[in-house]
Length: 63
Length: 343
Image 1: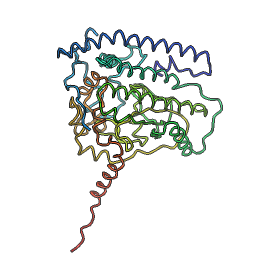
Image 2 (image 1 turned 45 degrees about the vertical axis):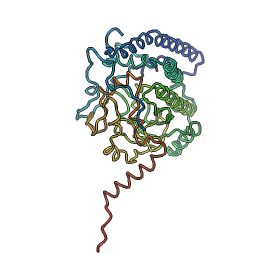
Image 3 (image 1 turned 30 degrees about the horizontal axis):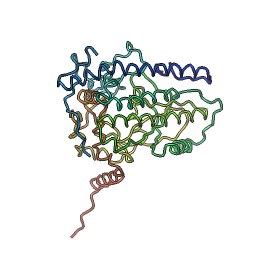
Image 4 (image 1 turned 135 degrees about the horizontal axis):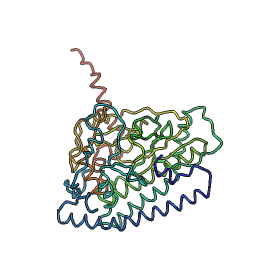
């Protein structure tokens, strides 16, 4: 079983467990959106700068 | 079609310290069979310490560069990914206590096919047995049978690949085909049989293409993706792994192999020149293969690509049946040439 299964698949017939799962997943999705906006914004700006200058963007340093 | 103004082949994304070749990880040139390793996409929610993905930095940039310069479109693509993830929480769940016994697996397969195509009329559905080819090293799948589902992308939008609006369409269809798989898995569980849907946009849990080929949806094309008669390469896949007894479909021969031997459209149009012109030996099997180290940096930088899928002649709407009939007839003529009448 992968981590997503462990975290978000409710195998029992339980409304309360499903509700807890939904809250946890909404929180995770909102955090990802925040990550996409803040960290992603930095990466996208940096990428566009390198692209305009024609210089390589090294993905394994300072990301 | 020809790609509309594709980005230059030399990617801006590079590695200062390049990781091990993805072709080596994939087993290019290996003559013994083995299960594949995950290479590029990182498993969502996974523990980074447990995931030795050497290409993880590029995967992170693939996730986040989407929409560079076009933030609204980027957000639209991410929205589909997140809503898909939200829907996949129902991919597995409670199985009904009362089980409906299956006396005729063929009738059950037809019933499930009809159930799905009634709700998703453009879906193509096939049934395959789950074997070792369907999962990555160290993983097993929770069922004996796979129900493979394919759904077409909007051709007019996809012609713009690899622009961001094509990426949005890819994510939209991944979400839709995953929703179909999730709905079907819930239906099977309501019949009292375990079923789990797999429709992650990154396919990090299951190998969709080998299963779909086994389920008779189509054949492997030169560009390393599947080609079917209905939609060519212009579609996306999801699956349901289940225990419910169903009759299996057989792999099909629609003449793709013969066609790809002589066609060079995808190899000629691929900007980073990543598509091999001949079959390669990969983990003990001779098959069409795409050079990972050339393809993936270009793919990641553009938030996806799909040029090879869209330039493929099979992807022209309505051409599949005719092309298949022509290729099969040509092969039959070569095998049994008509006798020359005696003078």
